Length: 280
Image (cartoon, rainbow, N blue to C red; front, top):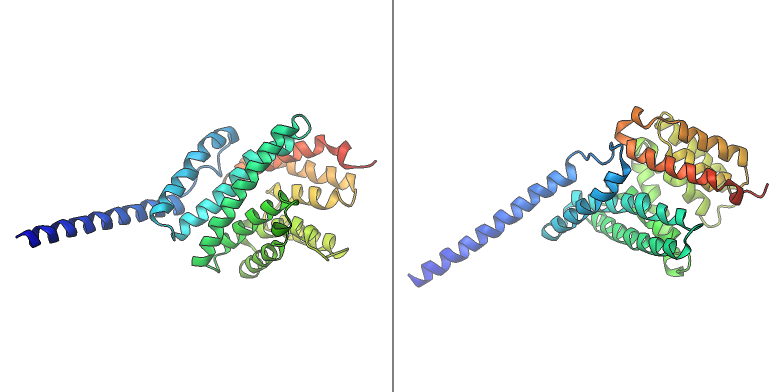
C-alpha cells in the first residue's frame, strides 16, 4: 500500500508538471504569435510605460520554455525596439543639455541591446534560417556595437553582424517592407574597407527600401540622411530626406504607426541639429 501511495503521489506530481509546462507553452504561443497592439498605437508614451511589463512577461515565460522560438524572437525584437525608441533616442537627445544623464541612458541602452542580442542568438540556435530572428539579432548587435566603440572586442563582431544581415537578405529581401535594406544603409557605411563604394551601395539599399515600403515608411529616409548625407556633407539632400520622412502620415500605415512616429521624432531632432552636423 505504501508503494502504491508513493507511486500515485509521483504520478500526480509529474502530471502537475506536465500541465504547467503545457499551459506555459500555450501562453507562450499566444504572446509570441498573437497580434501586438504596440506597433499600431498612436501614443508612444503609453507604449513606453506598458512595454517593460510585456518584456518581463516574455522573460518569465522563457524561464518555463527557454527554447521557445516565438518567445525568443519576441524578446529580441521587443528589447531592441524599446531600447532604441525609449532609451537610446532619449540619451542621444539629452547629450546637448545633460551629458551625465545622456551617458547613463546610453549605458542602459547598451545593456538592453546586449540582452536582445543574446536572446536572438539563442533563437538562431533553434531556427538558424528564421529571417525575423536574423534581422532583429543583427539590428540589436549592430546597435550594441554602435554604442561600444571603446570596446575593440565588440567592434570585432561586426563581420558576424554583416553575415546575419546578408543571410536575411538572401532568404527574403522583401522582409517587413524592406526593413533589411533599411538596416543595410548604415551597415554599408560602417563596413570596414568599403571605401567609396559604401555610399553607392547604401543608396541602392535605400532605393529598394523606398520601393518595398511604397514610400510610406519614414525609417529609410532618416537612415540615409544620417548615415550618408551627413558624412558626405550634403545638407540639401539631408533636409529633403527628413522633410519626406516628416510628411508621411502615420495613420495611412497603421501597422507601422509607432515606428513612423519614432522615426519622425528622430527626424525632427536631426533637423534641429543641422548646424552642428554641417560645416556650411
